[in-house]
Length: 311
Figure 1 (tube, rainbow, N blue to C red):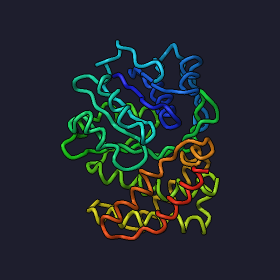
Figure 2 (spheres, rainbow, N blue to C red):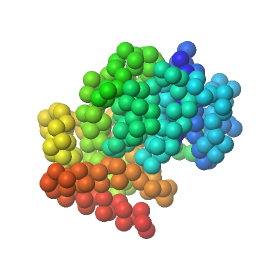
Figure 3 (cartoon, rainbow, N blue to C red):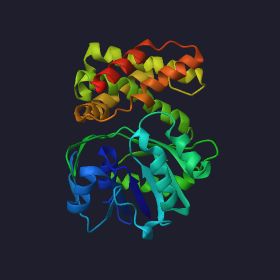
Figure 4 (tube, rainbow, N blue to C red):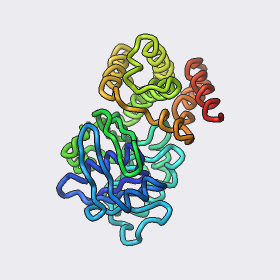
């Protein structure tokens, strides 16, 4: 089975490193910038929850600045899109070139709307919904730190492929230690991850703390209240969600499991990169306005993150 990782930042590098250890899986890892160049020249180091070195003699590293090798076109069975929100369309276009005629794609990026964008480019019949709660960050170019074990959820979208089509990838993810689970409701799966992201990412980023610090009562109260605003919007859109008490339990579980992780938004702010606030809390605000629901906490977090990034 041939798997490609497109957009190999922190999360993509984690998945690439772990999948590269699975027998029978051939990897193409596509990155960019200093991190991508370092991987192509020196390989990829995994540290944290597990240690592993991915040699450039064992997998194929490609660079966005150079482009994909033509010989890889039409040869990939599964493509995992793990880039930032603003990369989804461009990465989906790359996936279209790489996939076999019966290949499939899944987008692990944060936020709302990514699966729909992939469907526009690739067609609904070859796109899964997907989310991840694994924690990862990059201490240096060519190195990824696995900061907390989570789960990988893969789900069906309307008009999309089902579990039988996903099974080979689910098996590989299981062997890689990425704890995959299948969901028959991919839309609900994406929303549940978005609710975690809107609760954790902006507050941890603004406070400048690792995820575990949000277990402090004052910060947890703010995070959970932000999550409930998003849940109200999701339910208004008839998304099937667990009860509020179950959502609270899931939030605590993820904060404990990824307690030492620096969330992606904190990494982006510290590096001066554009954050994903527009597809997270801002998306909640916009959908809330359309539904006639007030989302003041999400609106405040959007304003604060946007102002901090502008500085």
